[in-house]
Length: 312
Image (cartoon, rainbow, N blue to C red):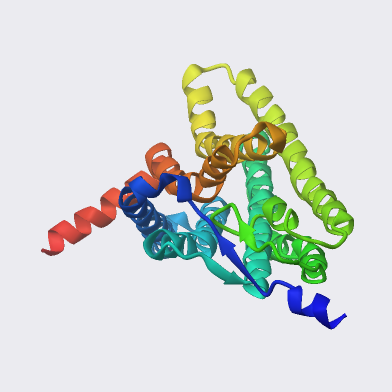
């Protein structure tokens, strides 16, 4: 028994992008630049929504929470990734690995729920415009946000507890840049069936049903838009949901590519590239999409720039 306890692994080594060693400096610089853009771009959106009074509407309050989630998600993954690239050492303790996975899974679940809430908001705005204000009240908006945060952080907790009870013997090298579930479970020397069952069950619940709700919502939205007689009216209606539709497509498209393709058909380098899409590219593009495709955000930015220019 004592020999077994002495063989248990207490620390893991994240390999990161070892096969791209010759491009280490370029990769580090690029990721650092992208992380800075993600961090300040999303913080800028949060500040903009808070500062500009005409953006104090449910749609933009939801957007600011999406930006907060993107900042937290990338901050959970990227700083450690940058450290691995800079020092070429990716040591992480057993408990830190589980915490990193828990935050990653919880924030991903929250974004699924929030995008669902945002699709409901767009459904009300386009399909029930006369009743929108009476249904999507400030109280309902606040309750939906709080519920999304609370529910989002629940499903991954039982999985994290299950992971903490696993034993890891001898092997401690994770061929990834963060503690993703599959490479983490591959190292376990105890039964992982419970952890896999919990992870699959909660992932299915938190992904499939929100995605189905989003599809139904946009089915009604598209049907309503097509019934508008004037082309200008259709364009105006579509513009109110085009940003959210682009973000939803990017988010679920990336999820499908990552988890819909069987892992045995993906090389580890391909798996890492797909993970980059989810952890880096999506949070990077979210503020870009909203700033470029949303007229209200664009006007707010222009007005602020004018005030700054006039004040100089």
